[in-house]
Each structure stands twice: as C-alpha cells, then as structure tokens.
Length: 284
Image (cartoon, rainbow, N blue to C red; front, side):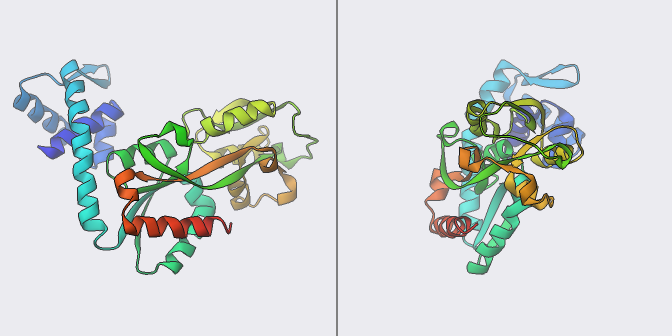
C-alpha cells in the first residue's frame, strides 16, 4: 500500500506516467497497476487523462494532501533510525555547487570527519528542497532565499560572488550601475529569486535564460552574449580571473544554504556535520 501511495504522490508532481516510472525506476505498467490498485481499494477514480498528461481528480488530490505528510514522516523515521545509526548522511546538492567548488568543500569535511559516510545526489535546488520535505534526502546544500522555505531549517553557508563573463571574453568596459544585458539562470531556479532584486538595482537585465549556470557560462564563452554566473562556475571552466567582472562587492551574490527538516537538523550528527561544513565554507 505504501509504495502505491508513493507512486500517486510522485505522479501528482510529474504529471505523466513516463516521468513517474523514471523517477521511481519501475516500468510504466507497474505505475499503472499501482494506481489501479489504489482506485480499487478506495472505490474512487483518483486520476484522469488529459492527452499525454495525467491529472488528479478531486478525490486524488485530497488523498495526496492527506498522506504526503505521513509518508514524509515515515521516510524521516527510517532515515533517522537506520542511516544516522550507521553514521550515514544522504545529501542533495545543487548541481552547479557540486560540479564546481562543492566537491572540494566536502572533501575537506570528509577529511575532518572520516567516520562519516556521505551519499551524494546532484539535483537542481528546487528538487533538493522537495526531496528533503518528502524525506528522501536528509540534508541539502543549495541556493535560494531563507524566507521562501519557512517549513525547513535553512542556515547560510556562504555568499558566492556572481560574475559577468564577457561574450567570447572580448574586453568589456563596464562600471557597476551601467545598463547591461546578460544570459543567466531561468526563473524556476533556486538562485533566481535571490539575485533578481540586486540585478535590477545594478541595471542588469536578463535577455535570455538557461536551466544551468554551466550552460550560461559556456554560451558566453562561445560568443552568444555576456553571461552572469557564479564565480565557482567560471573558475571551474578555466575562465581567467582578470577576464570576468566580479560583482560580489556590489552585493550581487548567490546565497548558499545548508537545509534540513527541523527535526533532522537537531540531531547531533547533523549538527556536527553542519558546523564542520560551515567552518570549511568560511575558508573558501
């Protein structure tokens, strides 16, 4: 029954049988059978097809709303009772962080806490937060505003400077406050809400957006326009420091946060990991 309910919850998020089967790593036939079993058990239609997509009925929506917190608590109990007892932490980390300076940071943390086992998952920040809420991840290191996630414990690790990568690295004469069009991250990302106001204050306008900061930087290097990206992404791609315009001192930074459910954050092992991660982040 639990796996059937988890399937319905996942389907409510993805909207398609195919995406649900991919997330759950089962066949589409298995997804259909699980939903059908729930409908027989409750004697109600829980989904309805809308072309290639699937929408929940009113009864399906009510069921998901009721059982989601219970499933999350069950997952959380499983993680706390098993993973923590073994000294294991399951982390969701923003892809751009883990692919740039994050891997080095966690290497230093592991060296300071060799008894700890770390299980990493690279995702976009909104996905990390959703999976913390659902109990799939114990901890997240991602970007975004603390005010947006009041149901979670969110602590600032660092402010990573944003830099302008000139198109094709051609010389760019720019002073803070000048009007500048850039390619940068799209609106659904965790970082966008935290940099949008400062971009507006500095008269920097997003003329195009992409789903990845690495893609933004690569397009800028290829000459498709100026790119606005975190300094760690620029460094990872080997962009010379003197070729970029660092806007960190002007207040244009992306906040990197350590996030967990409040009950998880209070656990001694998580607290120790947080303190060591914070110490190492301050050395960056």
